[in-house]
Image 1: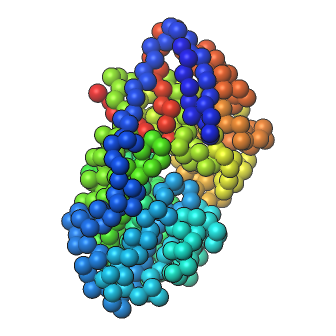
Image 2 (image 1 turned 90 degrees about the vertical axis):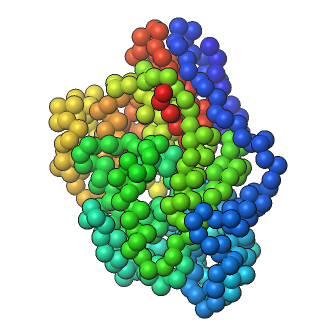
Image 3 (image 1 turned 180 degrees about the vertical axis):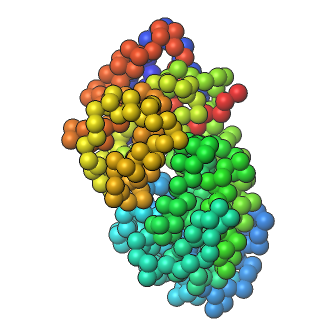
Length: 438
């Protein structure tokens, strides 16, 4: 059987064993359902928000407004509609000098003037003040208290000064939060590194759910914890969340109350990005498209597909990662993969973080949880990846997957670990889709 996967501006062709039971349900194509422009879609959401008054109908004279927008690791095309948000707050009396814009970096690399102009549009950027949050500079943080779980809510001090906070993002499958968007641009978007670390620690606590893709918000303690920040900050929070179709064009937008609008968007995302599967699979073939910017974002396709994979299953991954590792520091070279897998099996999933803390001291927040995630993957699954942007040295130091130089090699090596009549699911747009199990 022949399949084709999107790869940059072209396609990668693969031959699958004819004996496999291949499950490749098509994603709902919504690209042609609406002839509305991106601006018209967002304008409609701003005019009729969920659970909140429209921005344009408020009194924002002399009010300080903070707009937090996805950073450049997310494909949110904010430049297509940012001017509408600006127009709406100006209609309500807001002064440009009182509008401050920040990218939701978390602990990602700071954005340059050029990158920020590309994100929101150069003309828009020239009208406002903007700055990068610094998760590692305590002098720029304000303490808002703690969540019910005890997570410290330390955010950039611009949050404390704002009367209105507008969160501009995208709803998509998310490894731990279930879905992106909503309150995530605030926390962890502009949070202090230690607060992010405390929050992320939940994935290593009972019941040790290191993958929560597609989980309902009310059932996801990770999502509930970050959403408690809504009641801890003094300013009102208004979200503008978009959803993209297969061609990466805006298909829908939801604006308004941080929870009400987000929940509406999740239901839309389930209908358009959820892939129905009848049962757990022996293996998955995952392609990073459209999250191709770097290795960290390309790895989302792996996490997105995990709910479909049976214990001990095989992951065959195609990770374009155009910018390679990007801002991920090169880790120390680990033990051989088979040795590490054996050790992790012996220590048990409840002790993986403790084992990590012993053998990998001095890791920053992101390194710590990415390493924990990779260790859980090693323990649970067999992985064969084609990631041509990574050097041999980088692959050796990452050490959690078998690297394949040719795309077809991924399939051939994966097949060697599977029974002849294996059930295999294919996710061509794995960076943006997720399984819904019957």
